[in-house]
Image (tube, rainbow, N blue to C red; front, side, top):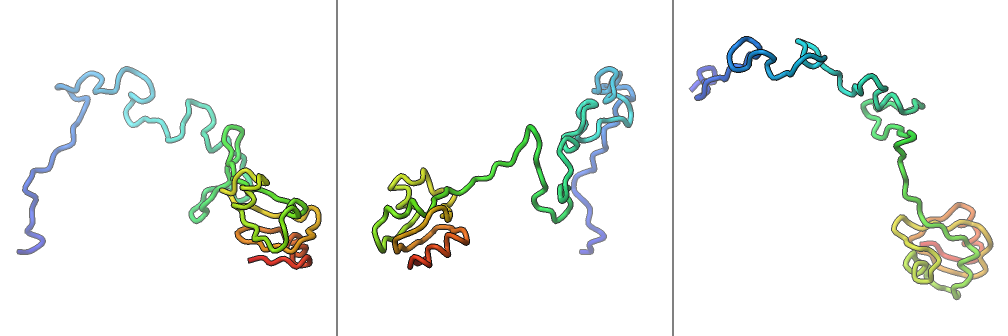
Length: 157
């Protein structure tokens, strides 16, 4: 068997030619009048009846275009906003309520009511001073908060 001798078992179906008499006559399924009824005419993608297209409403900023390779284009508009989940924040002076050598975790902070939830992470900020030697695990820290914790003898795991 040669590949050039293969033929399909079913006949090719001819494309339907509308608007030439027969069962699809008169308006040929396109209705009456209007832009979409004309031959060769149509509406471009994104056309909103003369109003600005959606992507024209967005502010154009540096890096705003969705070029190939740009995975996250800038999107800010009065009707559309990206909302980022922010991590919970705890200040250093609040952590003085724990006893020496306590392992501070996000779960412990939720149990003591210092934060509502640790779903989006917890960040320790350097507001206040730390007077106790504590161990930390599973938290994020600002640079000055890290300095103050190590100065107080704390350990960050």
